[in-house]
Image 1 (cartoon, protein in one colour):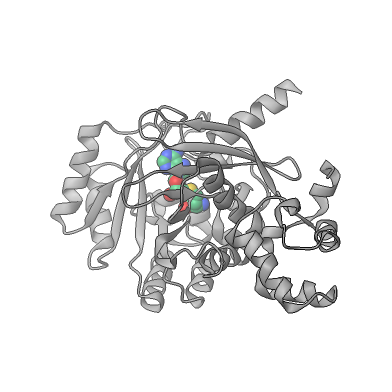
Image 2 (cartoon, helix red, strand yellow; image 1 turned 180 degrees about the vertical axis):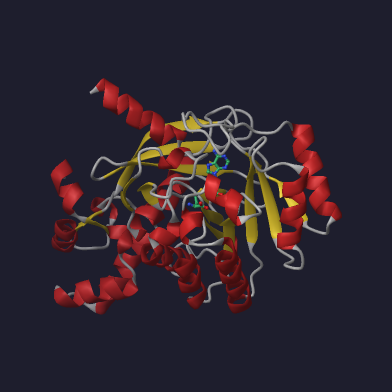
Amino acid sequence: MTQTDTQLKTPMQDLDRERIRQWCKKHAEPAYRAKQIFSWIHEKQVFSFEEMTNLPKPLRQKLAADYTAAPLRAVRRQISQIDGTNKFLYELGDGQCIETVFMPYKHGNSVCVSSQAGCAMGCTFCASTIGGKARDLTRGEILAQVYETQRLTGEPVSNVVVMGTGEPLDNTEEVIGFIRLLADEAGQNMSLRNMTLSTCGIVPGIYRLAEEKMPITLALSLHAPTQEKREKLMPIARRYRLDEVMKACDDYRSTTGRRETFEYALVAGVNDTDEDAAELAALLKGRHAHLNLIPVNPVRKKQDVGEKAKIRRPNRQHIVKFQNKLEKNGINVTIRREMGADIDGACGQLRAKRAVSDDSGR
Ligand code: SAH
């Protein structure tokens, strides 16, 4: 298959049962073929038509005329010597690159997937947003990250976090389609309870996700306890105000029965003061939610935040003090364990690095 073919074709992993059934009907194929095709894609998770050995060759050729079997390929892999984290840089059919991270845990292996190539949200501390958004990923391109990572590591994946590059609720329908396919009992059969979606707070997207009534965990990137401070770190806060975002989170919890997680990237001198801790405790009081403190990963960006502060993480002692203050106020809070510290800086940096070398090197 040539590169041009790949660019134009829909990933086979986009196909759910209904779409395969329709395709078989259109091509006058018997119904049992739909089951076989689904199994090759989502259960056996093959990346080539040649491997679909119980399908007649003409049928495989017809499939290959409409779809691509391998929507991505690994162009770089880094393995942490400290904790076994693997970071993959995958190239898509049109040459766009995305990052996927594999994290081995005692309770099961987790994969962090990207939902877009780049990101349009513009958070000041985030590397993924440096070049803006190139495009949305299809559900199959998101799914293929899980399948290919599982294949390349040889390890089963039991948990997925949609926390890689991109804003999932800026690509809501594809992300919902991805989640449905990942949970399909005839495919990967992943429990919805083992999935987490992280958003910067796109209010209509949170309501849309709640409508699906799926018991996935919603993680809200809070990063500041007040509207004013949040706006300085996250441009999207100007569009969706903190009070509206919190209301949408409440609705998500009452509709799905799942307690939300709040993510808070600690930036020294910007959102880590005693006053911030007190305001944060007041904001979260009574919600019984989980607060995850993330020591910010410095990214190479020339931008300043607020009063000319640079993006730096507070020292460990200060972070623990911040945590203690919140705990004293009855908030359930953890500090995110850093994974793969030896292989790369912040998320999105592998992709950003690639873009820089592409610009200058070719
Ligand atoms: N767009 C989504 C998901 C992708 S980012 C969102 O905003 O939630 C996943 C998490 O990593 C978010 O909480 C994001 O704010 C955080 N993050 C991004 N850059 C970071 C950095 N340099 N250091 C620490 N956390 C960062």
